[in-house]
Image (cartoon, rainbow, N blue to C red; front, side):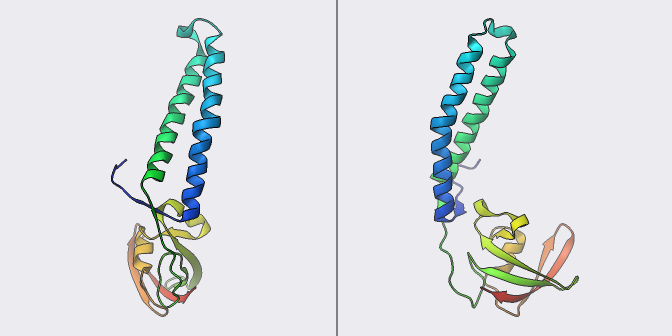
Length: 157
């Protein structure tokens, strides 16, 4: 991971990450240490699969702790736009797919909160970048793996 990278997120997401980090460093770390202790009690470590599994779990836990800690340390709190005249962070944008004549609503969020299945797209994604600062009635085009896609901005909330 890049050390100097900044991760855009809301204050709520940062709080969730802090709580997750606390859980991992306290509760989960103790659970894994207990698993290792129990596995050690089974005897010979060279042929002890329980010990190997517990040590692997410990490695995964430490990697997860490092990942979450990096996110917390490099968090950039984004200010949600309350403007409805153009698309910004936190905007809920209704767009029409010009080719398929279907309407979809998306919320523009930071990269750490993106979940396209829930209609939450990152401002760093190609579609999110194409939507930023657009106004109601604007037509946008952007390059996607499927080719050039065209949308019309119907509403901004």
